[in-house]
Length: 394
Image 1 (cartoon, one colour):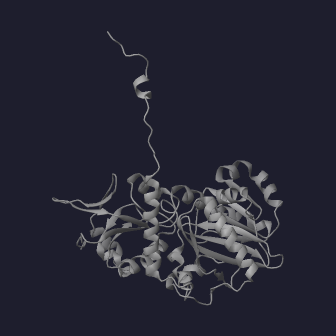
Image 2 (cartoon, one colour):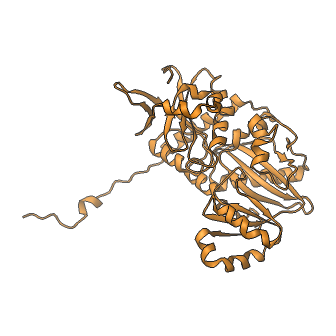
Image 3 (cartoon, one colour):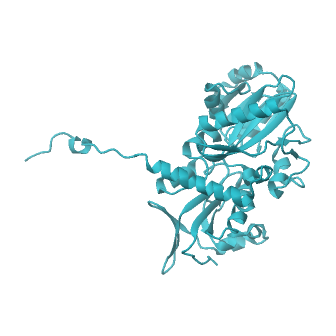
C-alpha cells in the first residue's frame, strides 16, 4: 500500500538506505527517532523513501515501520514493489508510474543516509538543485566533514588542535610505500589506521607495532582509496558533543563512551546487547553527561562551536574529541554531519524530546532555505551574443 495523501498536512520525505557500508545503520536512524517521532505530529505526512543497496528508489507507507525491513522475506517483498521516480524540478516530487501516475509534492526532505552518496554531500547537492528545504548540513560542510583528512586540514588552519597524522591514497601507497612508511615512522606509536571517508568505525585498526601496520592499511584500502594514519592519544578520554542550530547553537549533553575494548568499534556501537545506537537508551557503554571537569567541558564546547562554524555546519552535527587526561589537551577527532539516531538520547538529557528534536530540525531546514533564497545564483550578461565573433551577414 502506497498510502493516502492528506492535503492538509506538510509532506516530509525521510530518505534512507543507499549504496553505503552504513546502509543498515541508516535504516535504524531513519526510524529511530525520525519517522517514529514525525508520525506523532499531526501536521506532518511522512513519506519514507528507501534507496536499496542496488540504487533503486522505493516509497511505500508500509516502510514507515522498522519491522518491514526486519522480515525474513524482505527481499521478496521488495522485489514486488514498483520503483518510484523522483522529479527534481524546482521542488521534489515522488511519482509512482502507472496508467494514471500518482504524484506527491514534498515540502521538506529529511536525509537519514549515512556515508557514501548521502552524508558525503551527494544527496544534499541534488536537494539544493531541486530547490527544496532539507534537514541538516549543506553540501559543502558535508563533503569536508566526510573526509577526515580535509576536516583536520580545515580546522587546524583555524587553530583548532588535531593529533599528528599522515595520509595517502591507494595509488600513493602502491608507488611510494617506502616514503610513507618513513613518514609514519616519525609518528608516536601506537597508531590508528582509518579509511578517510567511512563512519561507524568500519575498518579502523589500532596498531602497536610495525608488523601490524601494512595489514591494517590493506584492510582499510578494501573500503576506501584514501587512508589516514594518526597518533593514538594515550591516557584517553573520548567525548562527543551533539549540536543543533544554524547561526544560534544549542548543545546536547556531552557523552563519554566507556567501552571495554581499546576503541569503540562497529560491534560496540551497534551489535552489543544494550548498544545505545540500536536501543537509544543509556547503558554501561556510555556516560551521559560525561564526568569531566568544568574546564574541560567548556573547552569541548568552545572547540565544538568553532569547528561547527568553521566547516559551515547547519541543522545538526556531532563533533568527537580526544582528550589526554594527564596534560588536559583537547583534540578534534572528527565531525559527523548525520549522527546515528540523531543522538536523541543525549538531547533527552537536556530536556529535548525526540519529537521536539525532529520538529526543530525541520524548522531549521526551512529557516536555512529562506536565507538561501536571498542569494542570487544567476548572473545576466551579454557574453552569448558576442560568442563566436560577428554574425555572417551574407
